[in-house]
Image (cartoon, rainbow, N blue to C red):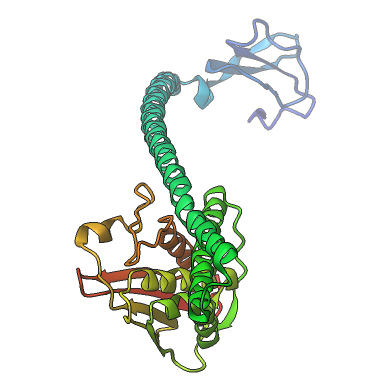
Length: 369
C-alpha cells in the first residue's frame, strides 16, 4: 500500500509511521518511505492506519485509516468444506456400493461357475455312463461276432477240405466236367473265405483307427470290370448274367483299396443273394460333381426289419445266401465306413422277393478344404 500527505508545504523529508491492526501490535518505526508491504495475511478484517511524524517526533493527530477484508481461499470457505464433506461421503458411499456390488457379482459368478461345473460333471457322468453302456454293448457285439465268425469259418474250411479230399482220393475216377466243377467250387469257397478274412482285417483297421486314406482319380468302368473278373467263378457257378451300364470315361475320386473293397463287397452280396440264372446290373450316373454307382440284383430281397439292421454296428446282421453261402456280416458296415471316408453316402432299396439295389456316391474330382 502506498500513501502520501496532501499538505503541499511538507517536503519530501516527511516521515510516516503506520500499523496494520489485527496483524501488528506496534506502529512502525518512522521513515520517509511511503509504502507498506504485507504478504501471506490470514483471512479476516484489518485496519491499516498511517500518520505523519511531527518535528518533535510525535505522531500527528490526523491519522488516515483503511479497512481491509482479506477473503479466505476457496478451499477454506464453508461452502467448499460442505461440498468436500459431501464429496468424501459420496466417495465412501460409492466405494462401499462398488465393493458390495463387486462381492455380489463375484458371488453370482461363483454360483454360476459352480452350477456350470456341476452341469459339466453331470454331463460328464452321463457321457461316461453312456460310454460304459456302449463299451458293454460293443464287447457283447464283438463276442457275438467272434463266436459267429469262428463258427462260420468252419463251414468254408470243411468244404475246402472236403473238395480237396475228393480230388485227392478220386481224381482219376472223376470226369473232366466233375473235376472242373470241384475246382470251380474250391475256388469259389476259397474266394469267399478270403473275402471274409479280408473284411475282418479291414474292420479291425477301422475300429483301431489304423486305416490310411490316399485318394486318387480312378476309372470307374475299369474298376468294375476288374472286380467282375475277380468274381467270375462265383458268377459262372450260379450262371448269373452281369449287365454293366457304366458311363464311359467316368472317374471317381477315392482311395483305390477302399473303392475296390466297396465294389467287391456289393457285387459279392448281389451274387450271394441271387438265385441261379439271376441278373445283376451295375450302373452309374453323374450329378452335381458326384458319381452315383448302383449295384442291383434280382434276388430274394429283404424285409423292412432286415433293412434296419444292415448298417447297425451293434447287430452285425448276416444271413445265408441262396446256396447257403456264409458271411461275417461286416461287408456292408465296411462299405459304409469306406464310402463316407471317401466323401460319399450309401443307400439301399429292397422289397421281399423283388431284389435289392445298393447305391453309393463318390466325388468325381478332388475336394478342396
